[in-house]
Length: 280
Length: 280
Figure 1 (cartoon, rainbow over the protein chains, first blue to last red):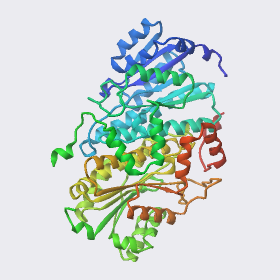
Figure 2 (cartoon, rainbow over the protein chains, first blue to last red):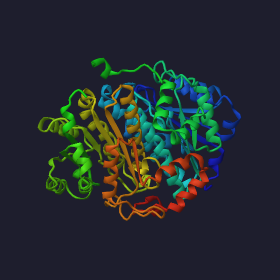
Figure 3 (cartoon, each protein chain N blue to C red):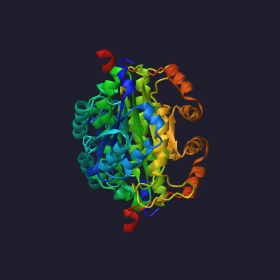
Figure 4 (cartoon, chains in turn cyan, brown):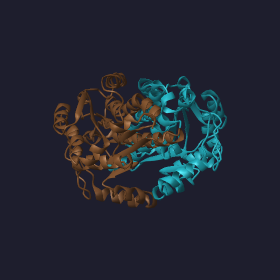
């Protein structure tokens, strides 16, 4: 550890977006790892960040005794991300944990998904991870200290219909996490940790009326708790629920027909546009 | 089969690019499935397409008795792809097999990779797949007949250092293929087949001086042969070499340390820029 002062205070950056890109925002708050471990209420901050506006989240975090800084950023725009990152560094200082949480989705079949929606999905769900990481990684490299969290999805491992660009971008996020982990190791930067979060549907309104026959829809609090626990123990890949891991193992050994039967049984559903059928 | 004439003649589109984006090109040639199965020389067409310019490939295919049409397209530009696809439909007609083969790479660590290189990697390696598929899928849907081939990479399953954006975009291509396969099934379009090709390094000059300790570098002819065999039997996922499949299975059961040891043993190498080390 080149800079021991980094041990006492850590800054967390949560780039986050709602479904609307114009509401994309980057919330930053300050805490230390001991507090993080000791306070079970901390997860509710992440929950609030997803459910309500950034200002409400900030107020909630402040009530919990944390110092909070908020920045509203359109995560689909590289230059906006870089400008916000510079502002963060100038006004606050280095950050220790970067949580790339921004995500958008277009629930529709491929031919009903518009080109600009596909481009925005990739801009927010994966390219933004590159820009935030490029902005904050140099200092982490210098100190050999930090943690980069990639929020992907169960859809980054298991495909689902009517969200093709979302699935593809979340596969990209899993690849980003895995390749980054390996590159940091090749460069001898063992002080910079990485974590990838892959949950199934969360009850946040991200898609309308999600339903799965065999797995309940997750509550945000539970997912945030799993993520923070994972960060504290440097867990590389967090599946929520953890039974997803078993399915991914089965995927390697089961024949295609059995997997197709499983998908039919699971019956993933949500409100979507299926233009092809409508035109039939 | 709504249009039986589709059975006698098939058109193949091979969007392809060299490392330089300006040399990106789309070659199209015409053959039928029986010929494809009967002619062992067909794979050499795909090989030539990768190794030399489009005109040389066209001449070679013509010598083999095929009708060939060539179109030069910058696969990083959506509008150029759409314009070329319209020209193809107008001048030639519908196509049966679309092979999304274009790909670019920047062999460098993340901080040495420039932003425009990351954006181009995603534009060519994954977004172009969306535009070509959106262009040719409507007719395939109408006829419930066709085949969409996604050329990904071993790097779309197993991460490697110093090619972060390449890995991430190739993971995205695997996700694209899997989600497209599932969506076509959900829409009842069982006449449209899908195949994903995932080879390790191929001796085409794509990266300079590739070396792997445990696996030999592949020859283009062999990969093209595996792909065409896979298309003929509607194989969903083609690993070259097929032993990759075993590694991916092991990845699910081995602990992280064992995987790290395997990566060290495999010792993947190629000429690259590692700016971070140079600055140390």
